[in-house]
Length: 357
Image (cartoon, rainbow, N blue to C red; front, side, top):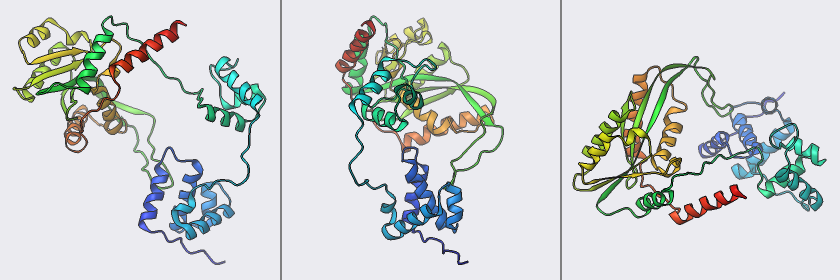
């Protein structure tokens, strides 16, 4: 029996298809078609590819033929011919009413299967109705409205520093990330390849913790960091003194920070008062979202910590310091805050009214 030749794949097409395979947002069918072409180019037979992708050899041949004729563009889903299916308005109204006004007896929220059962419709109909109405019952956001009596004044003050910073001044958003764990996996993970996502064991070994003080410069995007084994008022004052040394002495220094008690001790207040160029701006209570450095901490978590493997605290500290150094050179950019204080205050007011109604 004649074995089909391996599919010829140029470098550009291969890179595009590999990127498709890594995607977490593309449709499953498009990712499967990319895997089919990549596996055919590796010399696998259509039968082997069909088994690996849990599809038919006929499907594999169809996508191979289309790729050979049209290239990568041929792997996109095409618009289907014919008149689109229309769901009866009675069904739509029933599903929307149940979704927004009722809760199923056996669960805290609706799933597609539960809604199909209660509304006596198909899962496909539920999916289409929810998609059209942008309803996602499985998702839940959390919020907390600040009770700070000076909330409005503080929001206006800090947003003003972001959107209209004073001339000849440095604006730093400051906070600490505590209890950063040095985690090591119990076994080596499996690397990413075109037909398999990367993996790692769910269990891990703790090798200690450390903390990081960080000051995010909103004008340049650069970060001044200090790794510390302790987080207390003494360490925070030491970090403030470091910021005083690391910023131009001829410029005003505006420091944004939260209301942690360790940030407001008598010793710290006296030290700040002795430095006329330093101005402290406290965020409202329960408003960490207003502190720009929190966004940088999120980047640190995603890029360096979540998948990191650290066999010791020393290794973790080295990675934190190295990340800051590389970030400042390669990724730092001016911070842009786009929502005016008036919009924020109006949104909070609407939330309060909604809770009271």
